[in-house]
Image 1 (cartoon, rainbow, N blue to C red):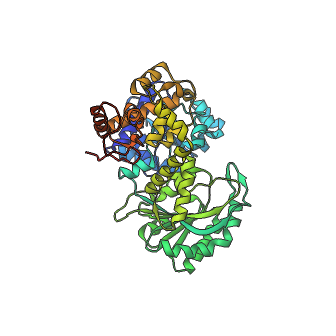
Image 2 (image 1 turned 90 degrees about the horizontal axis):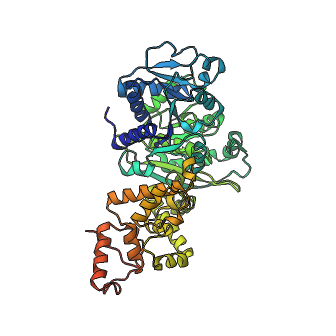
Image 3 (image 1 turned 90 degrees about the vertical axis):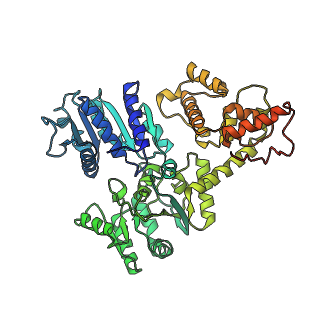
Length: 529
């Protein structure tokens, strides 16, 4: 099986980490981008070198999926470490293992501590739990890869307690732009649901409290769905089984063909097959389908389980992001959840690096009153936030642009290229917290960035990576930004290298005495050649 370009990049990045100084590394791929295929190919590479490998997960569906993909993608079979089955004594170089089984002391004691050379943790956001930590500590000398969908920054900092490095991250916007996931359109339903009395447990809202708060609105939600979900294949996420079943009945009474699945459904496989075949057009579930289930032609997702956890929200939405014949986009229904104390995940949190941009994007989608493409909405929100920031930082930025030094301040560079992920960066891994290395400082200075304003190695690494990508894409350099913004040009960071070079040549031709006649720097936009 031939890997997509980003999948091959991910494979090489992980193996480079393992060959270097990061035996515990992390891979982040959005739902639908083939993370299982990637780690199966990595396992194939290691197994062919003689390594014994373990795929570790917390659900049987994930283990079955990994075993199937391993055979399809590589031709390798595997042993099973779960319940009554064991991989001990097997001639297979690969095993899939249930953390619930392996975490038991009596079971772990049967394995030498060096039995596995490589461990892959699927859905790695669970890795800090006691069970996973017990298994990983037992095989402490193994190379470890954690694989997860897009985590929020809080999750990333938590994962940084165990993992040493982020080997590779492929973002949702990039996957949509590259054509590997479908575009997402979000709409805010003008229905205010009061969550002010909902309690919090283990860092997220309590399902039982959400259920009570949601119940009075189910009929209204079903009516609102008529306006948006007709002709679409829809998955609805709800907090509890009883609510899921009740909402199924309400939808059927309103003319939908709705079904429901939960952990106790004896006919679950048949219901899922019937939904896939089109016998139902709405599938309700109480958080059962967040992991390990694929139905590519789902083109509408309704999240009636509000959450503060971005990873969980991403998994719910990810049920509809895959490509399918005839599918143009995914429609994501959002609601006006009223809560006085907590930030909720909204469509903006799928795509925004900055909380500030996410809040502005959420406001803009709500004000639009119709489905909005989230990439376009993010760009507008980022522009709005940059404009607000520049207004508040006007004096500081003006002073930076007029400085005599030859190097660009990092803040000026970040604002010019509108990089909210850089301006909002927080170190996650241990090595990132230290000061920039001498080599990083020297390279940044050579590329035109003033290094004294950068206080940690992680930020320096991000800047260097961004500068390399900009050079590949033919965008402006920091030195060009410094040169042109001193003359009053705005957001030169978004120009091409050639356009900036052309304007610098024009300014040089008149002896650096000002800008060419007829050019207004404040409003000038280059015509790209």
